[in-house]
Amino acid sequence: MRILHIVDFYYPKLGGLEIAVQRLAEEQVKLGHEVKVITSDIGASDRLREEVINEVEVIRVRSTKLLYDDLTIPLEKPPLVKDVDVIHVHTQNSLFCLKIAQYAKKLGKPLIYQFIAVDYTKEDLRPAIKILGSLYQELIQRKAISLANKVITLNYRDYYLVWRKFNIKPYVVPHGIDERYLKKPKDEHVFKEKHKINTENVVSYVGRLHPSKGIDVLIRAIPLIMREVDDFVVVIAGRGSRFYEERLVKLAKRLGVEHKVKFLGYVSEDEKISLLDSSKILVLPTRHFGEAYPLIIDEAYARGVPVIATRIGALPYRVRHMETGLLIPPVDPLSLAKSIVVLTKNRGLFTRIRENLLRVRESILTWRHVCEKLDKIYGAKN
Image (cartoon, rainbow, N blue to C red; front, side, top):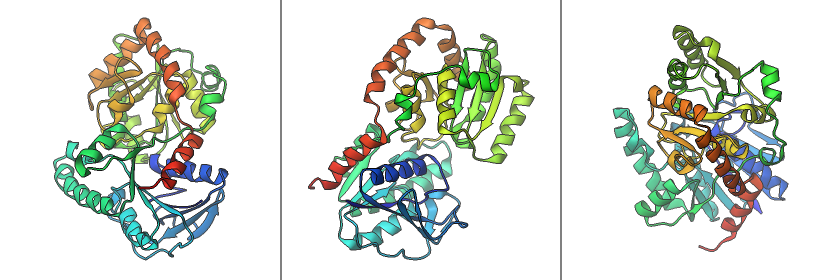
C-alpha cells in the first residue's frame, strides 16, 4: 500500500505528535508499505526539501508560522504525489494540514482525518484563547470534516465529541509504544547507580519543558511534600524552552528545594525506560486542555508505574482515579503534593494500583498493532 501522511511538523522537530507520526510511518515501512510525508519546513530550514529518512520519503513545503504551531501556513503547493492509495491527515487543528489536505483531495483517494483534542479551546482558562481559539477551532474542524472520508480519534473523549457534534462515528486508534517497553527486563538499579540516587521514592516527569506542561506546579509542590515525606527526589527529563527551564531552576533555588530536583535534559529511549523502572510515580501536572494522548502514560503503565495527572483534556480517559493512578485539579500544588504523599505512604493503595497495571499492560498497543488496525481502516469501505 502507498500511504501519504500530512502533518505540520516532522523530523527533526520532535514533539508528542511528531514523534508518533514518525514512528508510525517507519513501522509502516517495516511492514512493506511505501510511505511519504508532506510537512512544513518550519524548524528544519537546514534540511533538504526532499529527503529519505529511515526509508520514509519526506517532502517539506516552504511555510510560515503565525504565533502558534497550529497557525502554520504553506507558502507554496507541494508536488502532487499521484502514486498513493490513501491519505492520512494528522490533526484537524492545523491550518497547514487543512491547506495541504484540500490540495491532496484532488487526487481522489480515500482521505483519513485524525481528530485530536476536539473543542479543547472552549475549556481554556485564558479568555483570549477561549474566545478566539474556539472560533478558529470550530471553523477548521468543520472544513476538515467536509474533506474526510473517514475520521480517526486517539481516545474516547474525542470519539464521543465527534459523534455528537458531526453525527459521524469515528474509529478509535490510539498511539502505540516501542516494543522495548513491554519486553525489556525491569531493572531498578541502572538509573539510580548512574545518577547516584539512594531513595525508593523517585517522582518523575518525562516530556517537553514548556509552561503549558505545569512543571512549575510540581516544583511548588516539593516544599509541601517535604512536610510529610523527607526521603524522595523529583527527576525531570526532557528538553524544550530554555527560558522555562531556567525559570524552573531559579524557582527551585528560591524555594530552597534545589537538592530535591534533578534536571536530566534529553534522555534516550533506553534511559527513559531505566528512569521509569526506578520511578515510584510519574507525574503529568499539565495545564494544557489539548492533551489527547501522551505516550508517556502507556510507557509508564508498561513498566508498572502509577500516574498522577491533572483532570483535563483526555487524561481522565487515560488515568483511572484510584485504579491506575490519581487525578487532580490543574495548577494546584497542594493537591499534587497530597497525591504524591498518599502514593508514597499508603502501601495498600500503591500495591493495588501496581496490580491493576499488570492487567492494563496486556491491552497496550505497540506501533505494529497500530499499523495493523490502520491497515483495516484504510481498506474498509465507507
